[in-house]
Length: 222
Image 1 (spheres, rainbow, N blue to C red):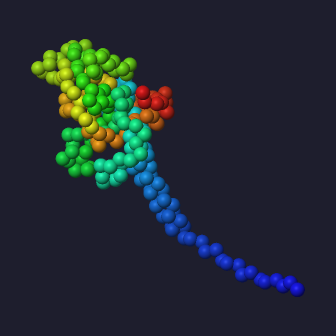
Image 2: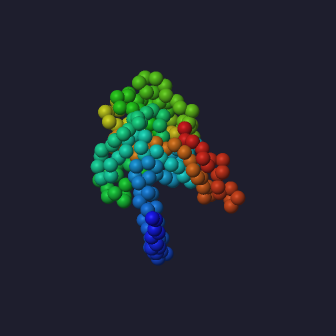
């Protein structure tokens, strides 16, 4: 003989609106921190050292896991897909700021020219890597004059050998870039990631109708 049992309805307690918003905000902040720390980070180009590859006002994303995920507050990296290689456009912490506080350290962006063990030499603006001419299509020269070697290493450098665990980098705007020719090599641990796409571009000096560079948005960085 069957029988029925009445079920009690459990009342649904609705959270206060401010609690729902605060929990959603906390989740969003945590996710953003995870993405920024381990996956991608946004950067803005403040100078013209990478003209014409990158313009002042370009906003780009940097792949932080391709060279290995860095554990916060340590120098340890794990699960690297590959090492930086010649031609990569990298973002790195400026080696000259190593003695400064965390908030005073600057990020630079340049192109890798010499890998560990490479011999790099610059003669009359031309770059030679391991005694072979290296002239990527992105390279530009906006000053036709040669600066004597005794006055500056800009147009004459080396030959020098890149030490183990370090990289020789240069800006694509070769005549107006403050790079390894002047301050030396980039340690592997200083490299934050590979710049790979421009997601926004803003021309502060342009007219109102031409401030947004639509043609650069979504373009890969080569």
